[in-house]
Length: 545
Image (cartoon, rainbow, N blue to C red; front, side, top):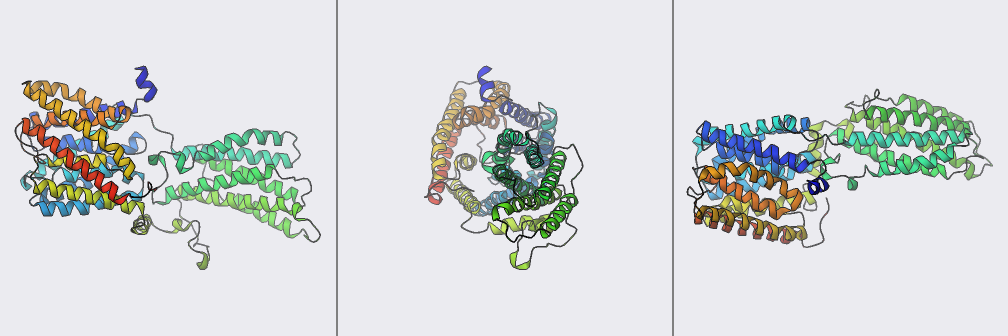
């Protein structure tokens, strides 16, 4: 337990494994033995696996549950199309390429869409294999609906994960630290002898909080990277906060004693400190939404004071402090405007950016959400886009694998495509590093299953051991690596196929050595095809999105 706590302090991997396993096993056994619907059972199982284990959904448990319910219509569409196209290898391959590209490519819309991509791919892969049985479509849809609804309920009721610190809360903490620095600057200019020392003590903490907002410092699923106004505004506010902090550092090294606009600059900086503190309070949920009128009024007063000062004969050093204070005020106004956009407020006036200078810094605030997502999709629809290259690579690999599985009549063609989803990465180096553990793990798990078949173990033993092996398998991936998760997942999936008699997704009806060899022969083409796709499109250094 101490080892587990060191590697997973909050037991996130274990919590997730328990939820997915209980939902998958409950749905599978209920459909198979209580309802007597063997066509429904695999979709109840793999629906939970696809959206619970293969998908990475960010946010709090309630937000993840809402996301799961929202993707139900997409899951129905993918299973329906896969079922209807399974009559022909060519049709299924064409559907695999088009849908594989579309599902992967829409991930450019944000972390939630990107996190769902692998799981949604599986919902087409599973029904696109023979037998062609449109009559079983209602049972398949009921099975996957049961899995997704149960998974959504489990997210909020069954050992839910602790809610992560949201980006909004981190932004509120960073802006709050910034407000303290600006207040210390204003106190220093007002003659407080301790103001400079207080500013020196606050700057390191504020710098760390601001740097923690950089995308490179955040996990991909926690970045405000969606195409909507909310995430764009939060990202803009974070960038503006870093600019303000940099200007506060400049003021720390500026000699204010000979400045000609010191009183007006002090008032302006104090007002910017109050505005940023109000923004931080709203982001933390402690206060009302701030308004720009306060900082606009302070900027107007400062400009009037500067206009009444004759610059003739004054050295630039004595005017520098006024310029720095003016930049602080303008950036504070932009920060408040971005926070109001993040709150869902639409601008009450047209975009003031001159036509020659557009798009302006807040161009997205004047567009509707569908238009913003369409803009994101359109601007990435180019061979130079990393997202386009990745989606095209994955779609081509899955389509070729589906074609080979159909033409060579692989008994476990489903596993060819599943192995590609597991092995293929964004660069050739990452694909090569994932290839060996995936192969070794899958073959080892299949071999253990085959040996158990030879031993003549009663099928009830599989039913009893299945939940425990699935829990360990789903938790082993994040903790022990890909090979362990592949081995245990291969064994557990083989156990499920042994309990489900009708052939689905290319699963043979009889448990035997042919089943083990089918799994093994299905793994090799998928792994090699995934590596080939990675090598073909990643000949240079690893691409960065």
